[in-house]
Amino acid sequence: MHTHEGMVRDTARHDPEGAVVLAGGYGVVGAEVARMLRARHPSLPLVLAGRTPARGEALASEVGASLQTMDLSGPSPLDFSARAVVTLVNDPTDRLLRACLQAGIPFVDITRWTARVQQALALAAVEPPRAPVVFASGWMGGLVPLVGAALARELGGASVIETAILYDLADRAGEDSIEFMDRLHVGFEVTEEGQRRVVEPLTGARRVELAGRPRRVVRLDTPEQLTLPLVLGARTVSTRIGFTDESATLAFQALQGLGLFHLLRGERFRSLRRALLRGSGKGGRAVVHVEVSSPGGTRAATLVDARGQAHLTATGATLALERALGLDGDAPPRGVAFPEQTPSPERALAALRSLGVELEIHPGADVERRAA
Image 1 (cartoon, rainbow, N blue to C red):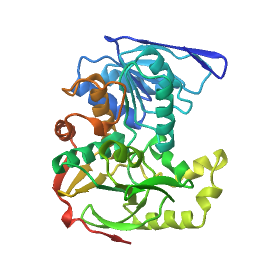
Image 2: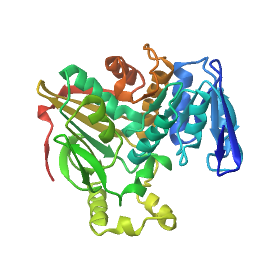
Image 3: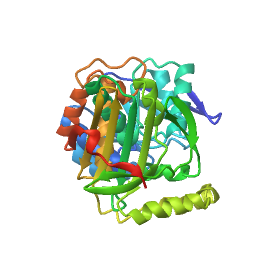
């Protein structure tokens, strides 16, 4: 049991035959996860949990799920049973993570930025998990590090892993998927040539071929820049993002250069920060390029999801849950794991394609990378 704010006592129970609880299961990404799980595992019981379960009634009826109230920042105790829990909303005080660690419930989280991954790892060191815990917060539900691991397996290792993301401002995006807006005034660590150094967000501009033409991409803080050097031994790891409208990329760089993201920090300007990334919501393609180099050569992969970033993120979350429960054909991990630690990355890539994601793997030499 966990005492929250000195008053609330949370209770969770592991039920190996019970339901998979999707915390935030009726949100933009959660709905995609629910549909994927129902299609891939028709007999798997599902619970859609959140602060306002009534919002999920239509989805629950569609996928045959139950609804449950779960407010991670509220005063009511958490009281639930689960076969596994997938966190699709931010767990700012690690409340749900603690409950699952103490109950021995398999746990998947796709929402943490790098500092919060580190915080969770510290918690797991203090209270070692008795069930699989998969932190899949790398870009798009951990798909970037998963693909990086698959390419490294082909090459026999990885010395450099570089990722470029094309973000479509017309795409659907939930609140938590644009949480990184609140981090754009915070420097972060990267590994370059085996050394850790601090860089600023939206700096280090390059041009990379994405969706048929060179795009300007700039640095972004993502957890795979922490985990890939640890797991794969890569000496240089970088993740960069660019927008379909290059003027947006330039505008964000200008705001950063003027220090405005620092001035706009805090709750007072939260809505304004988020509004900067809200587009039409009509939908758009998600495009990600991952390139891995080693002494044995260079390989690159391009992922394209015509259904957008919510669907692509849900794909990562679904694969992470299957990893945690051993539904991917391999034994579940023992304790904490990251997606890139999968024993069978080639099988994971096949599953990725089966979920409707276009994946092209090719030599990396034809990819344009130059200072922008």
